[in-house]
Length: 291
Image (tube, rainbow, N blue to C red; front, side, top):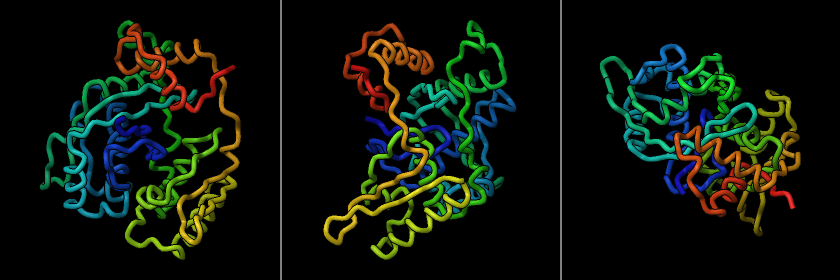
């Protein structure tokens, strides 16, 4: 399975067969969000331009120079990803796309990228839904995709501690559902703490994350180290946002919803898909099948 990315946020409780560092994932999501914003201003834009200074200000602290940003761009060049476009009603379309940097201009301190047409079309659908614009053959009222931008990078500007931002994204991504335990190696990767991780540092990081999120986001958050003997093996995340029961659906309901996201992704909704594919989608949505 390809790596799944939630649009505009670094969702990481996922199968990771495409190796990405935390800063690469941060950069990828920033480019997608920026493409959406640029399309809002000019729906015909095809090349998306990003200021190096803005990238440095809004992304991981490791992206602190043109050369480092350029190196990360090269690392994620032409890799294929699977990411979700979420609506406020939590409906989602799954879009397959390649990230393709087209031009890199050093003299103007700009990074320029292109995206595949299917990705651009999905972003345009989000904009049409938000602005109530009818697309050819598809009134805006019938569009299932709507923008889910509450987790924009602007919201996190007051939080400089990168691990806290990542954990908050996870809490919001799993709102209404319990969060799976995070393997300690995955936790170190996503929080960008691989080089300096010790048991003492782990205790400090978890407490700092708790304090920042509890104070800034009005949530009750608890992070617990899971140990085998003296060795930390996983991190457990609990919050008051992650305690509701999973939505129960019938097989017919999940089948109908699956067709909607196929349409959103430009795929054939009438094609016969194996039952295992639908059950995989059920698990992805964190739904529970009715007895």
